[in-house]
Image 1 (cartoon, rainbow, N blue to C red):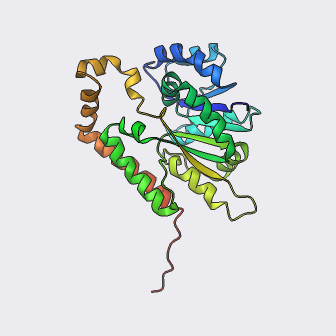
Image 2: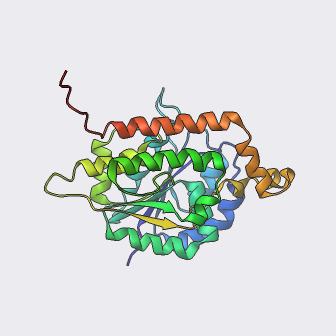
Image 3: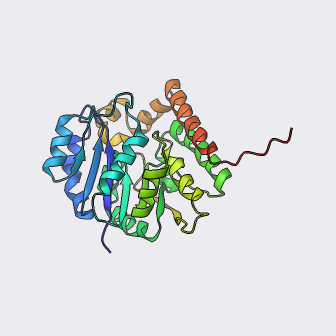
Length: 270
């Protein structure tokens, strides 16, 4: 079975992932026949140069005025770029997570590329072990999102990992009909496709749990981890910062607002 094209987004103003890219990219390119990356406007030029030199298709156009760093919009642009390839399937994954996955669980990544081709849309989530690698500030707030998603759909899925499998027709449907430009595409993409299933052609969906989507941020922060006294101590710094809790709660609130658009409102009988 042919592997899908990999679509990804990259935001790295300090080139903090450069060493990992140089180390992992050859392995990543043995898994995927084509890779497309949408970079943010402030991504370091060295990152873009390395990717293009390796034959990666890169979209580094400046974001339109007022768009800023809208990850949902960037994800849609990455998928649109991948559709220029003839592959019938796309695996979307944020680039920092992709590098972590390819470096630590390459066989699983390759297997996942095959498995997503059984459905139109695949939510790629995290196993219990992979979930526990994240700081509590992330686990607790994403658990709220997953819980509300289950209330709406009756599906016990981990929807916040930033990775998806898409058939071409699912990708085209999302690009033409789902206008969410924020990180809440985590929830709006599967919910939008579910809203279309009453038509003559439903979109099959599933969730696959993976080890490779464990917490990836430490990969590019080795000096900070060492200075903190080790990984556990460094992760505890995340949880000890009230500002991070506020940011994560606001992110969760944005996801909930996006989900409410897909909830039928009760009739007003007053």
